[in-house]
Amino acid sequence: MYDDSGQLVTGEMTDYVLPRAHMMPWIESDHTTTPTPVNPMGVKGVGEAGTIGCSPAMVNSVVDALSPLGVRHIDMPMTPEKIWRLIKGASSHQPVARMGERL
Amino acid sequence: MISQAFEYTAPKTLDEALELLAEGAKPLSGGMSLIPMMKLRLAAPDHLVDLGRLKDLNYIREEGGSLHIGATTTHQEVAGSALVRAKCPLLAQTAAGVGDPQVRNRGTIGGSAAHADPSADYPAALEALEATFVLKGAKSERTVAAADFFLDTFMTALEPGEIVREVIVPIEDSGTGTYYEKVVQKASGFAVVGIAIRIKKASGKISWARVGVTGLSNHAYRATAVERALEGGAEVQHAAAMVAQGVDANSDLHASAEYRTHLAVVHTARALMAAMSRCEQPRTS
Image (cartoon, rainbow over all chains, first blue to last red; front, side, top):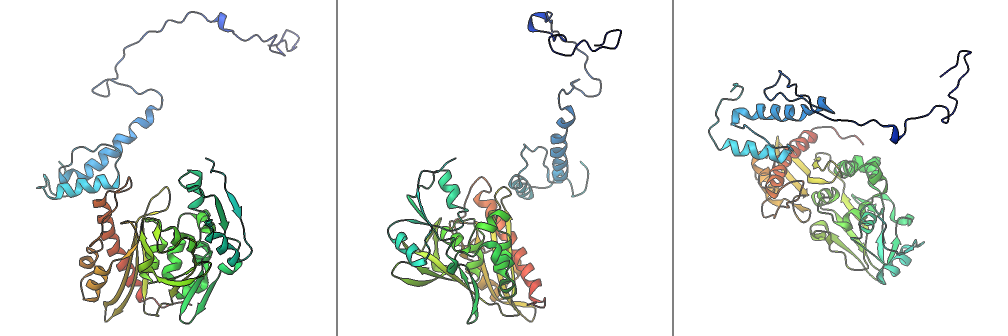
């Protein structure tokens, strides 16, 4: 802060007083409920919301790739061995769709 | 972590080292396995004898149709040697893929062989090469073939007090195609499975084959069933399927026994195809 003549009056912390704990006002916390219309559950991400979609997107892409073999679900982590077992297990069954055909 | 206290000696001569080893000291070469084991307190030797400073254990020589490699020759020295690359390309290729640059700069061929880690790269190549190990103790020197050297997990034909002094590998004929292929554990560089191949061809078919396998079971071995099938005219895929014959496959967090066996079969076939394509390439020396 400067006075009318342009002199800095907050040169040290004794002048530029920071808020202390006893100065804190009472804080009341509450919830507002505004579900998002863009997904069925109405939920929104907080924090690193942008990254949340990556894992299911990757899993869904692998499920999509394996869907001609009847694969509907994969639990993470998608290790090479897990994928190999899904393919191996599926090949002994009748495929529900031909390769390349969308389900 | 910090290891238990131990005594350390860096002898000037091999004889001095062997005398200390006869008294129960443990040999230290590159320390790429022993030192981590000591820090994890999986090993607690009282006395280490450092072989790393013995200059007469560090050499690569051509002698009577073979390459003689001193025990403390590092992976990087083998991988970078013009002699090894020209005369025994399988060993150079295998050495170039061990661990990471730090490990290759410190780790040694004798140390790797003596440690006999079931996932180490070198043993696959040394089995395929039918290498000979020169083992030396204070009062003895003997040679052991690779097939009789790797006995079990971390177990070799070495007797207490003996060290691997030298590894002898053949100089390849000009028509031999070789390849080392591994599925790598990403964090460590070790082989989940590793397949070392040497083949010769006659009129487009494999006429002679040597197949060394690491990572699959308790110790490296030669897949003689694959070799016999190939030499009997079997197709690559058919022969590769025999790679785990008579072997008890390992299970660990990297791969179950079943998946490991599958990987070994697939990568044996791939390594064979790669070795076949290398038969035709003119050799550079």
